[in-house]
Image (tube, rainbow, N blue to C red; front, side, top):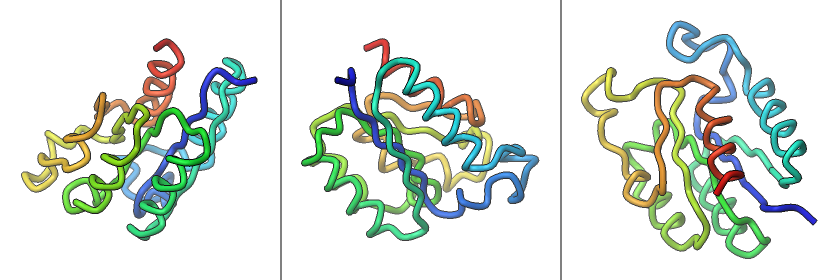
Length: 145
């Protein structure tokens, strides 16, 4: 039996990691990030599922499913939906487990519209600017809690 079950959600355009603006987002691919998380989870006897979508509704569907499948925490990088999606916030508000918001870049050093996050209104923690290490730090925090 695992110690916890985590859903990792990656928002729009994160499927292009490694090739999209590497000066901002780095050279690791989404597969590299997910593989590191799978390994970290397995070493700590945690279950993990990773999902990426460019579609807001698919992310909301995944959050809603997590309410019913034993998921204890969500790590979410909502990408551009961070700044626009009340619907994702509403879905997260209906989830009873822990939520950690992750951003690869330091959104506060970027355009002003990126400084506001709807998801932060629900998140138990926010990690920004650590690149892919932010995902690993989020998972480590959940494992330790």
